[in-house]
Image (cartoon, rainbow, N blue to C red; front, side, top):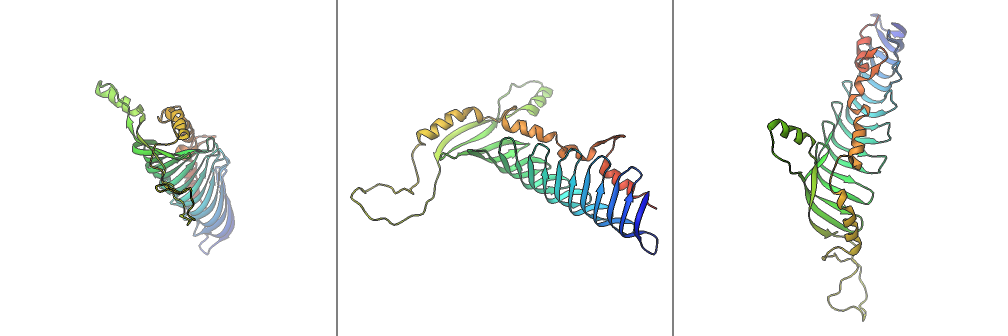
Length: 293
């Protein structure tokens, strides 16, 4: 491969340099003892680009990777993988901001759905929404636990109009059949929301001293008191209209976006098809680096 730059006494690439690899990729940046080490820019011939830190030929530290489809990751790397804290910008304008582990979303993170304005704020396990979280929509939010992208168990919907609906997500009842059939049904079953009660929000306001007036009778509450009765007409009307949204069903707002998310490079970006065939281009980067002068 072609190389222009500094070398040490042993003839190894050492210092600043520029290289063109046999596959057409290029690297410009720091070297140490023959390996990419320090700050550098690696350009893939398919349009992908990594700008950031290297340690012994591997992406390690802070760096930005722009993928061939235009999506990009900005954040921490370890041993050639997204690891630590970072932000992924998807081509459909969705974003994930939070923790990564071994190349996957893992830990605490926020996924923003650009099309709907909703966002998932909470726990991730191996790239999936799992654990305690809050799914925030434009005029209401759901608080509870998630498993494999679906809400499970007890939780509550909190509405901006000032009420909460408590309940739980249960797996839909299904007919018992052959063992194989049950496994297929379990793979496609979607939890359904079962409401148990509706309460008003416990709103807090500062308590201000006020002058007693003739209109203040005993037993009357000030403007900051908590409501203890049933929700008002506005809340009831909203809940009536919201019944159909309580079920997390395929084809719904979140399901559509989650499927769209799955089509991004999030799941398969490190196996991008290059012109010559199916090549893992980040592994190719490492292989080519071994064929040095």
